[in-house]
Amino acid sequence: MPNGFWRTAKLRGDNRIPLAGFGLLALALLFLSRADVNVFDRARAQLSDATVPLLLKFEAPVDGFNRWVSNLGSIFTIYNENLRLKEENARLRQWQGAAVLLQGRVEHYEKLLHAVPRRETSSVLAHVIGRSGKPYLQTLILDAGRIHGVNAGEAVLDARGLIGRILVAGENTSWVMPLRDMNSRVPVTIAPGNAQAILSGNNTAIPGIETLDPRAKVKPGDVVFTSGDGGLLPPGLPIGTIVVKSGRYRVALFADASSGSDVEVLDFKGIPEVQPTPTPASLPAKALAPAMPADGAATAPSVPAVVDGNE
Amino acid sequence: MTDRDMERASVMVGGLFAVIIPFVCGVLGVVLSNMPLSFTSGVLPPPLLALMPVYFWCLVRPDLMPPWAAFVLGLLQDLFSGMPPGVWAASFIAAYAVVDRQRDSFAGLPGWAAILGFGIAALIANLCAYVLIAIYFRHIPSVTAALSLLLVTVLLYVPVVFVLSLVHRRLVGSARTHL
Image (cartoon, rainbow over all chains, first blue to last red; front, top):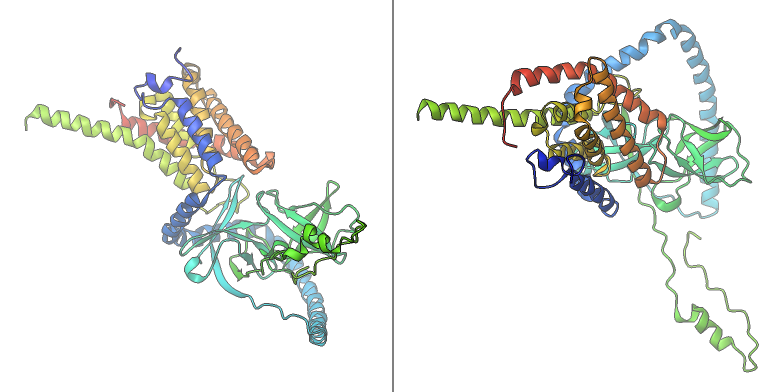
């Protein structure tokens, strides 16, 4: 074989594995990792746990520098910004009054209807100690981990709304996958039309909407919440509002993952949807057999009772 | 111990030192580029600093940057960046293979054209990572994000190559190894 691609390592003296061998090894690792990524996740968690002191040392000056740079331009618009915020504050106070009134009304109706009480969700307050804006994976690092009760998959919120989900939980730190990350998929409800869709991250500030029913009536300004489908995230967490860009529905997020510093991690364990165990009588063959008259005329099988409360 | 033995020991230590430095530079590049801190508030992605020592020593002293070192650095990049294991390892190996095959052409590039040489290596690594990620996640990643990574990496190579040259001249020197 001539000198070049396949035998360069050997010609250099490293005759154990040729270059192509390493390429194949990398590809094998990649495709094996589809089956189980826990080994790498554990290593990442340990890595972030180990680098906490370093991150804490550097986080404050870097954050201060970024804030200083981003505030440079706002010095000239601060007066107008103040006026706008005062107006917005007055409007929000009106909405707060309306929300408190409606909340009381909902609780009253729930009591009247003997509704199943909502499950209490506990939460952990955490501080963002690192952010990485890599092109293929955007993450936030929190200073709370498994010993604080944080587990993979849990929802992360700031004061404005959902930021993302816990990707990896270490002992003392955890990685958050923000909603805008291209690997993020969250089932959502769009109000007021109650349309169901999937919020799909695309590495921009305005993630897209997928699997939306074409008959659904959605318009800019509609509010997007978590739907709770799949039981991973609690329903009703505010996410953002619908905007239209390039003829497609996108979501302008309430929470800003790039600036929020204190976040809440919700401990929510959805009730798993348990399929009802089929009894011999409910199986079609068994159900049909006793109902089959002697002359062979079939009667409709009885519909099995719905056992699952979620149905 | 005779003077000759001392000299031999000194040469061995120097050789070991020369072998380790390029790899340590790569590890340092992995750590620095994956620090979850951004001076641009996340507007620009961190550069692929680990690819720079791989390219540099693959050209000037390939005996100090063997394929296993490029593979391990790629794997470390995967581990630190949160990517599935193998994405950057395969990408680094792809870039390494091209540079290794065309070493004479790359090494002969004068002045600013040398930056273009690294640009080609970075493009190959990024393209490989882009395709692997698209296959792995079954989702086409943002082209803008991939291009910004490429651009930042190539631009940062200009100052970094001066540091690498300095390290090579002062620390690695002309030490010969038996790798």
